[in-house]
Amino acid sequence: MSSPSLLVFTETEVDERAVVTRLGGRPLAPHDFVWPSCGDCQRPLQFLAQLVTSGAELLLLFSCHSTDCAIGGGPDLPSNRAVRVTASNSQLQQAPANTPLLPLTAVELMPFDQTNRPYDTARFDPGRFVFGMMGGVPDSVSRHVPHCTACARPMGFIASLEEGSLFNFAGVQAFVFACEGCTAAQLFVDDFF
Image 1 (tube, helix red, strand yellow):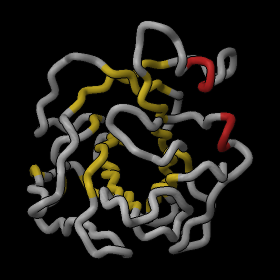
Image 2 (image 1 turned 180 degrees about the vertical axis):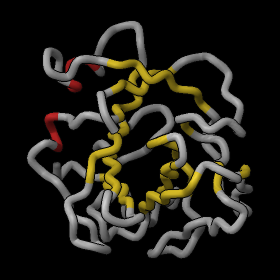
Image 3 (image 1 turned 120 degrees about the vertical axis):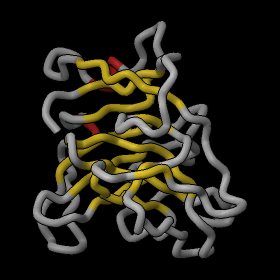
Image 4 (image 1 turned 90 degrees about the vertical axis):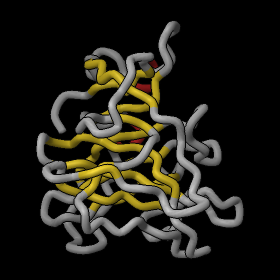
């Protein structure tokens, strides 16, 4: 991801079938997609967001909605998943039975200059609701680069998401990273950054 953008709430309607960055609803994925399950409770994970990382790729974010499972944690926590899929030939996926869906929410990608104004300041501007940031690297993660659990290479920052009206991250932020060397992606829900 290149220049940073704020993920800002907009009241614009969004088509669930569109290849766009959005929150909630149902994910787009290829026909052979397998809905991820929590490694702790074995229940299907709740779909959080769909991030467009390039014209041909989507990152789908999932987290456990059970109050019995840990929300925060590093890359080995089995209740958080980031899944990379190709956007071409993707179709809407139906959530498994008894898996709640978050409301479909459109976001605007609002570019901002991170060098003159840090993310932690920009996200509190009055008059807009900021869900997170894509691209760039927020100050809070610039010193902590996770390594891919599959190939051990440093991972690239994709996005951060804020706890708020849609997400319950136990009072902390979520961070999304993807490996440039393989197809791995990770969702960290923690304050260890």
